[in-house]
Amino acid sequence: MENPEIARQRYAELIRQRAGLRSERLVRALAEVPREDYLGPGPWKIHRPPNLWGYEDTRDGDPAHIYDDVLVALDPVARINNGLPSGLAAWIDALNLQEGERAVHAGCGTGYYTALIAHVVGEKGRVTGIEFDHELAMRARANLRHFPHVQVITGDATAYNAGPADGILINAGATHPCPLWLDSLDAGGRLVLPLIRWPEGSKFGSGIAGFGVMLRVQRIGTHYAAKLLSPVGIYPCHGALDAQADRLLAQALERGNLAEVRSLRRDAHDADSSCLLHGHGYCLSSVAVP
Image (cartoon, rainbow, N blue to C red; front, side):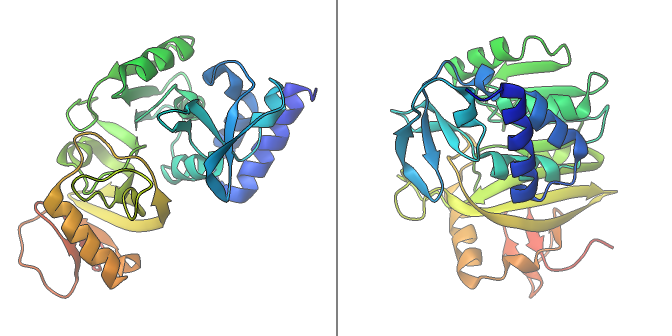
């Protein structure tokens, strides 16, 4: 059995390289937070990329098995997993969180990635985890009880107002950026969210359902800078799905020019050639923030 501390150090360097992490505080968190504490006892069922559909069982409960870039099942029947470390770490890194800042993690699951965020902002910061599933929220609350600056809420992330935030990570897919998330960004605040396809009657893993792009938005004065980060496949966010927004996203993805996004506009305006995705109350534009 590998020494867990050595396994975590090795894991932290692996994720640093795969995700291109810039935050040293995040790398230290990967090396210090025991992932097994948030997953339940082993053996575990894991997904190992590129095969993300079939589970394999770890040989035993040695934590070294989960200190790798693998997804770990939280509920294998419902196919709910603790996400891919290189993916989630890259999204957290994109928030550019600093010590003492206020962060929101929507879709916090059992709390592992929330714990990483808590380490990054430190005890002078504040973290609110929001989880729709009651059982997962209870597990997260228990797992994170030793962090005095972390609060876990059972609820709808599109409706629960956690107050002004410096960083918001939406860890479930939306067809559009919800107004509450944008309104909650304090000056200079950053939002990272997945914009995904979710036609009515969808089931994750069937066709295009759950697939789209990661978007980073930053509030600058009264404007919002925006850019794409990567492709994504993820489960949907309850309350963040809209049929019209899905159709508009489908058209934008088909045109293939979302990589040109430079800003998110919320002002009322007629669509023009700079509007890459012109929705109701939001517009992804190729024009940079002034």
